[in-house]
Length: 179
Length: 249
Image (cartoon, rainbow over all chains, first blue to last red; front, side):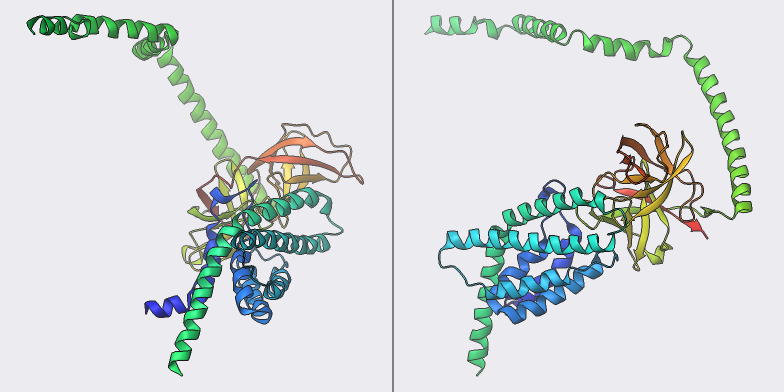
């Protein structure tokens, strides 16, 4: 049972992303803004399993998170799918320090990209309405999210990366011994 | 050896009287530093039963409260009768539902709170949610045990409001931060900082006259529209308990 959990840790942890999304601990806020949680999971997972799996899991993540967010006709799917593809193409750095910093930088860029994609959707929907009010608060949200996501990414992504890598190795070893 | 023992027992800190004096001097020092606040508070407590006019003031206050209650009941009756004539929204006669905030998103694009009461407890989509201070938002969707409330600060939120002093209607629009905007479609309007904003008596979504906020600043007019920033009275980022109230359609 324990071995099964260790093997499937990546999938089990995936189920906890919505819980984290709901929990939103306010002691991790920066200017009242939370980090973009799904990226912390998506980045190490896609780096290990590749672009195609990144695309699929990005789609699943987007579908789940969209269903949890208020129904405003906006979606997080394009941002997460494109990030999943991009993350899958990235190689793993041998240098630990550089690897940590890379996690931070990549997550910051991805958070910026996803934030803008979402903001554009809002702008398009309210183009003729009161969009002028939305500019400054939305830009503040995007940049605060970029900062806090980049700050926490080295810690969380490296932790998850190690966990997923071990579970993948264990998975391969078990399938090899079965053969 | 005897001499040493005698000297040690004769030290000043071995005498109780000296310690008493030290404590007394410390007390005096404290009274001096605190400018007698301890004495003042003590005097306040012991003299309270003997203050002049205390009893008389209570009688007067009770009478005024009773008068206000009678007037309030009369006004409520009038209000209900008139709203029925005009076919406007009114509060349901059934009791409100108290709920606990179990999740909140008050600092992102999605501004919502999730409550621990859902469809099973009788919460309906469109019910409105008030907390200490005033209106917070409306129930956007419900699950069996939870309900999601779209906050007034959400960019999706649009609510008809009423400025009491000038008796003018406006549209409260969430702007993605903690200060939603009120749009007045009249550039001649005389709004001032500090004016109270309530839910509109003409609203078809909300019951009338629920406190919402105070006008914090007034913007320059654009395209014959005047806008103002609102400081909300209800703070969703700090509230843990709310009331869900049904609206009769």
